[in-house]
Structures are given as structure tokens and as C-alpha cells.
Length: 289
Ligand SMILES: C[S@@+](CC[C@H](N)C(=O)[O-])C[C@H]1O[C@@H](n2cnc3c(N)ncnc32)[C@H](O)[C@@H]1O
Image (cartoon, rainbow, N blue to C red; front, top):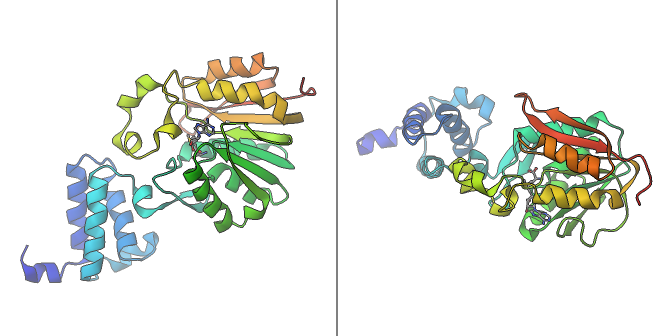
């Protein structure tokens, strides 16, 4: 490309070149990702991008786009490049310190919202805060506590709580699961790290290299967190309370067994939109022992 061509590079030219580069780097959704990043680079809403494809890109926009495309070609997820992602219709800050929220986690939200609104809910391992913040935004009368072992993740959750107007109803606690938690809850929710150590090498680089290790795996069989959460849940749930846990698609029966063994009733597996086991739920009918 000559200097003169570079000066008159249109958004369309840049998009075509970027799509080719991402495809060559093995990015599955090369076209969609190139469009999302272009919209951000030229600062237009994603659904208005087509209207701007004939625009000539200025130097700064070209440099911004080139840097974004280089990061994506190195398999950094789009949400981590943009610093945000949509979850349950709301935009959340996402940084290297938190798990990039997954659309599958919306199954847990859907399952929670099918039940009665709680007075007080607990989100264990909150990460970016998507679960606690979404549920508090959907249930304006509820209070919540969200814990994480990562102080850096809790800072992101705090920003997201403020962004969606629920900060006054959400306490953030840096804790190892239930450690130091006071009071009881009507609903416990968690998307714990459930990937087994032996599954880690098979993960996509977007996940393996860009999500925090502690958000992904226990370094063992993938069920350490679930065991700890189920073991502590009864003592922190009010009679009539519920628990909902996101699981790996092969963990349904084992997690059901854990909940049944801990005295939960109505233990059930819920599937995601692809038909895979995704959430296990249980109810507590008696008083905690
Ligand atoms: C799979 S991520 C889920 C993040 C967020 N809830 C979501 O759904 O996107 C698991 C989270 O659990 C946190 N975590 C890991 N071990 C923990 C522990 N022992 N106590 C509390 N949180 C822990 C990680 O820091 C991470 O934020």
C-alpha cells in the first residue's frame, strides 16, 4: 500500500483487511469481531457501522484499529480489548482481573428470576459482579452480598454495581467462599471455577491465556469449589431458601449428589440454550442444623 493509499483508507478497506488478518490467525468469528472492533475504533454504535463504511479513517482511528486487530489476532477476547461486554441486556466493565462473562451464565439468571424475589441474596465468586448486579437490578427490593477471593475482581464488581445503580444494596467482601460472612440469605448463587486441571490445556487461548487462572480451575477435579459451597450453604440459607450453581456440562449428577447429601430437596439440573447441563438448583425446607 502506498502512502497515498494509506491516507485515503476507508473504513471498508480497513474492515476487509482486518477480517482477512483475523481469519488467517484462526479467529472463528473474524468478520463479526473485525466489525465490533472497527465500530469501537471509529467510535460509532455497532449497529450504525454500515453507514460509516465509506468514511476515510484518520491517523488516530487507523492506529487504534491496528492495535485492536493485533491484540485480537493474538487471541485476546473482544470483550477484554473493548473493556466491556453485554450481559442480560446491560453493559459490564471487564478487565484482565475478571472472567470474561459467558452467555451461558444467563441460564443461571433465568433460573433465579423464575423464583420469588429474595430479601437478601449471596453471590459467591462474583468476579465482574454480573450475577449479583443483574439480580439486584432485576429485583429492586433485594439486598445482596458478593464475595470473591480476588480484591482486584471485587473492584471491578464495585464499578459495575455503581454503573447499574445497585451499589447501595450490594456489600462486597474479599473472602474464601463463606469465610467471615454474617447473616443468612434467601438465595445463594455461584458460578465457581469448575474446570478440571486436566481440561485446562484443551481450552481456547482466549480463555486459557486471558481469564484469571483462579476463575477457571481448582487445579484438581473441578469440583473443589462446589464441595466447599455446598458444605457451607445450609448454615447460610434461611428456611425456604434456594441455591443455584453453574456447573460444567459433565458435572450435573455429581453436584446433584452433593446437594442431596447436604439435605437439599427439589434438586434439579437445568440445561443451557444448547441443551447442555448448566445449572444445578436445590431448595432448603428445614431449619439449618
Ligand atoms: C468462574 S468465575 C465467575 C465470575 C462471575 N461470577 C461470572 O459468572 O462471570 C469464578 C470466580 O470465583 C472466584 N474464586 C475462586 N476461588 C475462590 C474462593 N476460594 N473464594 C471466593 N471466590 C473464589 C474467582 O476469583 C472468580 O472471580
